Every structure is written in C-alpha cells, then in structure tokens.
Image (cartoon, rainbow, N blue to C red; front, side, top):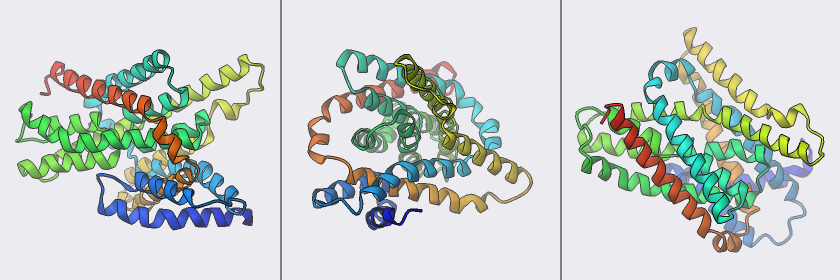
Length: 340
C-alpha cells in the first residue's frame, strides 16, 4: 500500500472505532450512521486535506468493496435454500415494488438518478450493505451515499418502533414468531433494525428467538438479491457508456468484488456442509461490519453537511414511499399466501 494513504486511513479509523462501540450500545441506530455523522462533523474542522485526501478516497471506495466481499462469509446458502424459499415470493414482490417506486418518482420528481437508485436498492434489499455494494457499481459520490444511508436510517428507526405495535394491531400470531418474522425480514431494510424489531416481538410474547431466527433467515435471503441487482446496474451503466461512444470493458460489466462476494458465500456453504463450524466465519462477518463502519467514516468526511440538509426533502419523500410500499406489499402477500 502507498504510504501516502496511511494518514487518511488512520483518520477514518479514529472516527470508526468510537462509532463501532457506540453502534453496539445503540443498535437501533447502528455503527454506520454514527460513523457518517461523526465523519461529517469532523469534516467541518478539516480545512487542509492534503495529507489525508488519498487515504480517505481509498477507504470510501476500496475498503467499502472489501466489506461487501467479507459480507459473503455470513451467508450459508444451504440454510437459505432450505428455509428461505417460503418468503421468496414476498421478497421478489417487495423488491420489485421498491425499485418501481424509486424509478417512477425519480422520473416524475426529477430526483438524482444515483440517489434514487441507492434509496430504492437500500430499501428493498438490505439497507447499508446493499448501498455499499451498489455505490461503486454506479459510481455514486460520497454525498449521494450519505444521503441514501441517512434516509434508510430514518425509516429503520420508525420500523423498529412502529412495527411491533402494527403487528399487535393486526393480530399477528403470538404463539409462533413465523408471521412477524417474515414481516420484519421483508419490510425492514437494515440487518441491525431487523434484529431489533424481531427481538422486540420475541420479548413481547416470550417466544425465545423464534421470531429473530425467522427474520434473520429471510433477511439473508434478501441479501442474495445484491448479486442480480448489481450486475444489472453494471450492465445498464456500461450500455449507456457504449451509447455515448465510451469504451466498455468486461470489468465494467462485471464488478469483480461481487464475484468475490459470491465465492465467499460458496466457501462458507461448502465448509459448513463438510462439518466445519459456522463460528469459524464469525470474525469475517464481524470484520465486514467494521469495514462498512470504517468506509462510512470516509464518506462522512467527504460529505457536505449543509448541502445534505438542503437537498434532503425529495430523498426522504422517496424513502417514505418505498418504505410504505414495501410494508403494504409484504402484508398483502402474507395474507394472499395464508401466512397471516
């Protein structure tokens, strides 16, 4: 590694470490959003970026891609295929709903394409992880990533607070965590918020970890949608570049870090099938989460806080529409499938 990148990486690390521990203390908020906020505040006092600029850029791009690769070590494809199939129709419909809403509102409200894409993908797949995977593919700026992450965070908090109340009002089964687990796993976007929401339902009705186990499995199934979505976005971007007379390479069509993400998932699945404990991959999953927090510190440092607030209205409205659409479709599909 070029030594000139080290000061910037070190600065991001100084921000990420407290954000990581604060995220553990306040899981409903999570480390990534805390890291972005701390980064934005620190960025206001960082007048001379000469020595740290290269390291910050490296962290926001390449560390973010590395985090996505390590995310694959948290996916046991056998478990997903065995128990996640039940929720697959709901997942497909909620993802389609969010993407259609994002596309439609982007056109009608003239929202920035990258922001709409990140919010649509983040809402429908897996929050910050999906945004982390999508941002390099569409070459999103740090401001766009920060706006999307902030929007997703806002509706994460609302979901964690309101969904257990909504489940009670809808008279969801309180003897089994299946119905609410599927609901939380398909309608809440970020893993930490899915966990918080499902765990709340378990504690409300003394269900142990029934709801949490179901919600996490459904959430992992959703995570696999990162693969086709990012590949489509890469192909679509390359097609537009070719249409403008720009050279198109295989690397642009197929982001290599997504291939490594898939390979990591396969390694985990095969290893567990051969009798290796899934706990072996625990440190890699933890590393993935920390690297996302680290990358978010860099993104926060590169984000103009004033502009973020000024331009927040349309993205928040888009996020609200995606969130409401996903919630309604998830409940409707469960009703149609006889799960409610």
